[in-house]
Length: 168
Image (tube, rainbow, N blue to C red; front, side, top):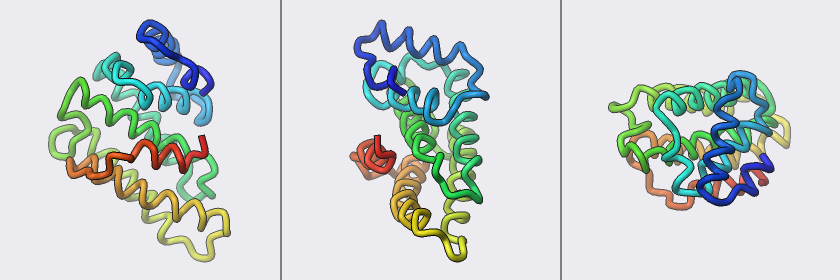
């Protein structure tokens, strides 16, 4: 994650992203590589445009896995999953129809996992105080992400809201 916070300049961004993308994304650690990529994609207008469609698919798989691993748990390892999705939404700078429901099949995958997480969070009986607190922060972010995926997003501060929830 530190790399994502300190990288400045197109060349350094490119090299950092190449390094991350050359690794085995399936074995990334949620608060290291996933967080780093989320930061890179969210902090500049050039980073998302460096991605290829194949990169977006691989990163989508990582984000979905990060969502999935929290279902049934306390969502203590969830912070960067929505942040990575929001960063991927910024690929629209390169492809305006990216991750738009009805146009891009990846949008349906993200909508499905978001709905699973929403159902899990809303359906919990006797959640811990920590989970209740997380749930009150996570659910509004998930609603906004769904709106973005549906092409109906209206929250210009979505990345800032996610950044605040992640405690970054």
